[in-house]
Image 1: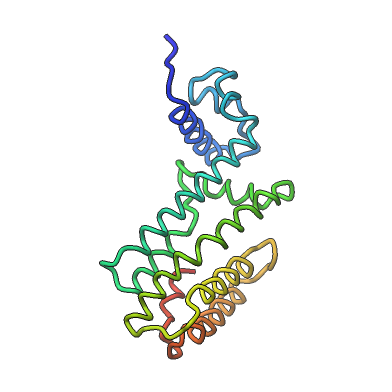
Image 2 (image 1 turned 180 degrees about the vertical axis):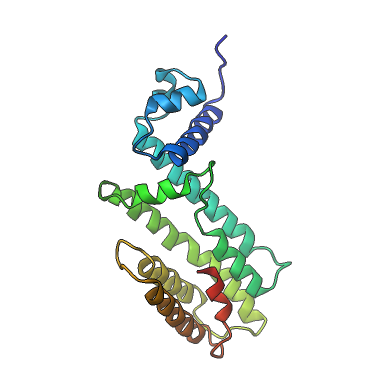
Length: 209
C-alpha cells in the first residue's frame, strides 16, 4: 500500500537521502534513480518536489545555510557563556559540517563549480547580510561589559566577515598553509584595533581557523 506523507516530510526525506548519497558517491556519480530507490518513491513523486538533481542540491544548500544561521544565533544568544566563549561558539557554528546528513564537502564542491556561480554568490550574500548582525550582538554585550571600545559594532563585524569570506575563498586566493596563517594573524591584529582592545587580547581567534 502506497504511503502518502505530508509534502514537507517527503521533501526532507528526499533531501536526507540525497545528502547521504552525495557524501557516499559524490554529486556527479549520484543519479535521480539512486535517490528514488533510497527513499522508495516513484519518479513522479520526486519530480513533484524537485525539478532536477541540481534543484535538490540547491535545496540542500538553502537548508544547510538556514541550519547554520540558526546554530549561530543560538550560540550568540547563550548568555550563560562569556563574551569570548560566545564568539568562539558562534564562529564554530558557522562551519559547514561534513556528515551523512549534510553532505558538507559535496555542497562546498558544488558551489565552487563555474556553472553554480549564481548559487555561490547567493549563499555568500546571505552570509554577508545575516552573520554580521548576529556577531554585533555579542560585540554590543562586550562593549557593555567594558571589553570592547567601538562606536561601530555592526560595521566592525561586516568588515571582519567580508575579509574572511573573501580571503579564505580558494577560488579567489590560492594560499599555502603558511600564507593562510599569516593572513589570520594579520586579521586578528586588525580586529583588535577595530574593537579597541590591546594587542594579543584576541589571539584565541586562532583556534577557530
